[in-house]
Image 1 (spheres, helix red, strand yellow):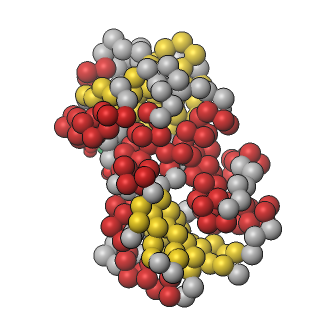
Image 2 (tube, rainbow, N blue to C red):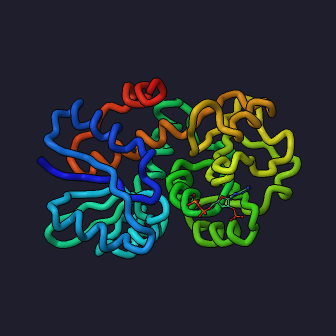
Length: 270
Ligand code: ATR
């Protein structure tokens, strides 16, 4: 049996153990996957203990994605560009750090939801760790523009500077968006955790547009409620992204791509 885990703080409500149990059942892999709570000041030590116990890999969640980057001996290109790691692979020659969040988001949007990104006007709200991880994968699918809006304008500008060589990026705060329309609006802020919605101007959703909240919860998130009132055609929460990033990590560890459709539906019905 090979051992894997998700590490974070808090971790009790993580759905990753359930998702990976489904994947391993489905593919017949001999593995176990648990949730590990790390003290906020003891991430590296907690990873080291799990590795010594024979652990083969880990998923990393809030607030450790930057630290996970630092303890990795090697980084995949996408983790290096994002400077954030959500997947660790342990081997004899050290720790490999990857970031599967962006690939999971793009796969959910393009394959599960059949929403092509090429030529689309995309608005990404937020400029923290969650936003940083998805910028490059979104740009790789040639949107006509990727606008990054953030409450603290300067952080959006920094992301723009860092990623502008990969595609057409515009940055600003929410007030700067007045009069503009987007085909896809993605919420990568943590505002939902406090029941808040970033202050988007009215009329931001184009015809046939999609609102995508990287957060999820019981019922509709505050952002998706707002998007519905504002006339967005399609409303999506982050459950699909969650399962797809997990599948991408599973593939990295086991070399098998699990089927995600039923797992996404199963999670919605839990
Ligand atoms: P994460 O890793 O989840 O992205 P983070 O790095 O703390 O966490 O970033 C949180 C993001 O949510 C930031 O973009 C933050 O905006 P600021 O950079 O201006 O702080 C955004 N955010 C949090 N609460 C918000 C709110 N009530 N309205 C708008 N944006 C909010």
